[in-house]
Length: 302
Image 1 (cartoon, helix red, strand yellow):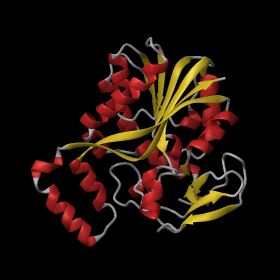
Image 2 (cartoon, one colour):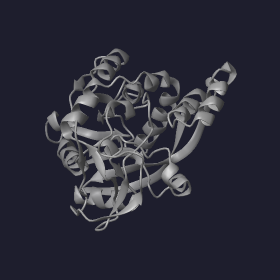
Image 3 (cartoon, helix red, strand yellow):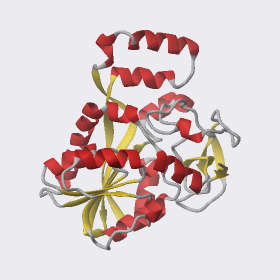
Image 4 (cartoon, one colour):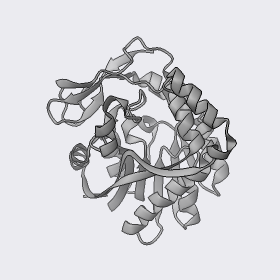
């Protein structure tokens, strides 16, 4: 495993200014322990801002081979344990899609995980396809869906016919990609004329991000890019898309998951407090909906 420096995917500049110091350096090992909802540690590399276009990024990231290995082997049981609340989020996403596409059509969900959004869309009449690198997640997705093909592949190996889908979705994916512009260009090719792209991602310009600063819960080792509405619009335009709609995302999580997430910061006092609450079973399954600083967008192929 090797940690490598990142250049700007939007403008290509290697010049930057420091934003947050982070709590990891290039010698940090066991990268898989920092990935997914089932992570053991919620730390991150230094965060910098591009001097050319203001896109915020992690100064370091895992090399391509390590990333491919992590996502292919990933098993995220805590993600699946939140299936009820994730379905609530999936319904919210599908409502957004339906605002711009009144009739169910063909849909590709990139990074479909265990298929919760896909099954929600399929039940609403959509003809769905999933792309997922994790063999474990793809297996669960196949069991959740009826007659739907889950393509088990990394994005750099994936290939679909040109102009094949009416809608492509990227829920909580683009921030993980080493080369998001390459992926958006592929998506542009796979979409039919005037097709739609929907995605959700952390928003570095959000109120939670600005209020919490270096303590924002979405600063994570697995996140390479931190877009604002402005830098996201610039990247989409570069790749042939017109940004049509932006909105703040409200996430659904159980109290148990929120408390477990807090233990990943290894603060002894915080851990004792949260574990005491976790042991009180009355609280762990209570669902909460709240903002953590994410943005959901709709964009159209031009």
